[in-house]
Each structure stands twice: as structure tokens, then as C-alpha cells.
Image (cartoon, rainbow, N blue to C red):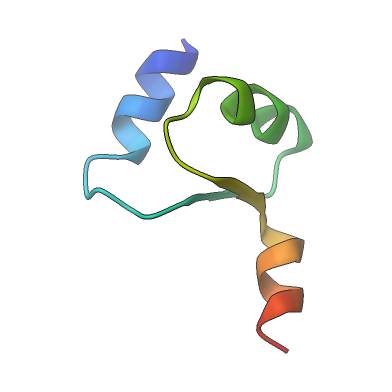
Length: 47
């Protein structure tokens, strides 16, 4: 299931994956081939 979700998320070849789900964040960090960040972290870095 995780690999299927990651395959869908990287179709457009993003430089990173952003999620608002703590469980997804923990899972994707272990399995993704690119950085995974929490949405709050991304928004905070842009303010």
C-alpha cells in the first residue's frame, strides 16, 4: 500500500513530498527516495 501511494505521489517527479498526516510522514520518510516534510514545516519556512 505504501509503495502504491508513493508511486502515485511521484508521477510528476516532485523534489519533495509534503503531507499533513503524521502516520504518512513517518511511513514515507522510511520508504521514499526523496525528502518528505510536514505541511506545517513547509508553511513555517515560507513565512
